[in-house]
Length: 129
Image (cartoon, rainbow, N blue to C red; front, side):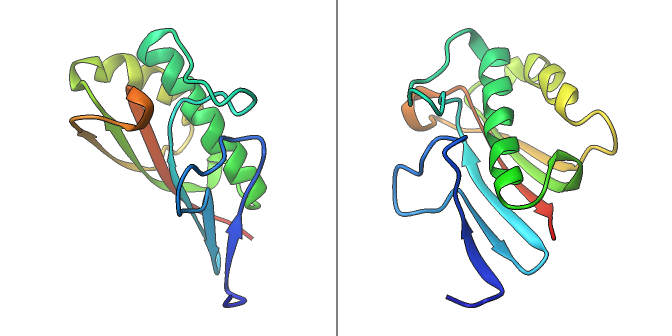
């Protein structure tokens, strides 16, 4: 593998369930794969609706960022995938708890379905190193 490109993995976030990595570090950037609201200890989707799921997703993103030498404060871009945009304000309230200072650029899109029937998935790009 290219020395400027490496795989990032941690047991503190759900394991990849397919041919992808939790994150790829490329130079001074960290590309975090879309995280869904799985409890990393059990592999089970968290219950409690969009806010509980958003909170778990962002905890998973945070764990992958830390494993890659970054943190939420270094995130420059996120993409949020939701199955129901009518729940945007509830998702956004939790998202704001994690990104209260200098929030990253963001796109939010509604999708027909997400893996494991999740309500939300978030991917991120962050600075690292």
